[in-house]
Length: 168
Image: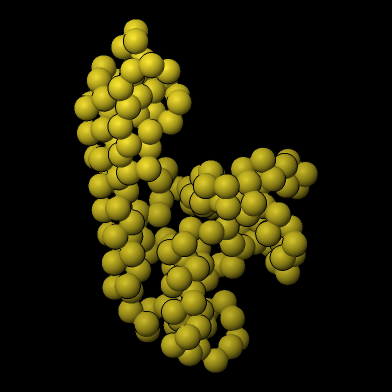
């Protein structure tokens, strides 16, 4: 590709001779390098802001509230470490069938992308969203099935394949 190029936040932005703007070698509808650069900067700022707000919301949860959620589902001694681990797990958006994680996540309005659905970020960075009914069914069906849960966490394809096999 003979033309101009710049890097912004780890993305390669290029313009070819015909004026087509590419971001990471994918053709875009941007009209200039500068427009693409500004868009990437804005997207990066938005992601960092959302991440920071979400993190703060979890940090603001009272330990008492989280402890009561844990006690509701599990007969264990609730320690500061256990509370911290549950908050970390909930804020990571990793797929889990633990009802404590879902209850903690339900306290954070940013964790609900679509009304009535929970979203999860999988190991391949894809995002899946499932409704609360499906989540409850998975909680029942997959309790103690760590190999299946780990398989589902790997990719969107794995996640959907397991759902198909379960008839969800």
